[in-house]
Length: 187
Image 1 (cartoon, rainbow, N blue to C red):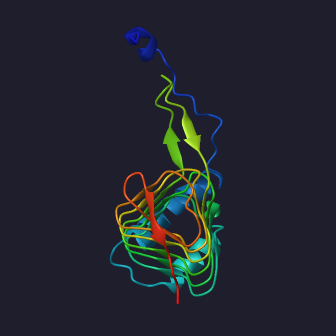
Image 2 (image 1 turned 60 degrees about the horizontal axis):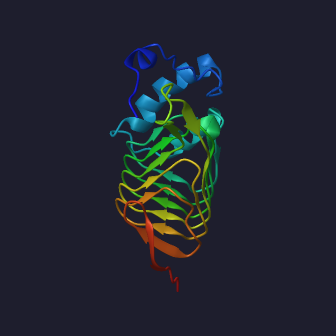
């Protein structure tokens, strides 16, 4: 099928239905707080990070560890359960809600991406869906969770794997797209 170049050039990218929430002043303030305290690799302090996330509307459990270099788009769309660990350079691109359960581990460089664009339309419409990581989920280093995915209880997404569909409980996945490898046995 041939694309009419003039039609594409005249297409408006209208995603006016999307609202990030938080209000413009709050988003402006969060931008600087995120850069100074979260993305900054020189800030190892955990308590101020938890306090700042709560201040901006995130629901953060007890004992949550947030390592340096973490990028969080909108804290008011984030929930992290007790004793979860967010590793270095994790990117939580939460245009939609992200819920991380208790005792989860997001290893270095893992990405949670709640938004994408519809490549089948010339208007390149924005699409957003929430992500849910149930209790005990482990995301390996540089793994990616796509919009709308639920990682069920104690699922493992191995290093560099890409989850485009829901992950079953107590199951280990690897590859791109992620495929079931074996059951996760916990002793």
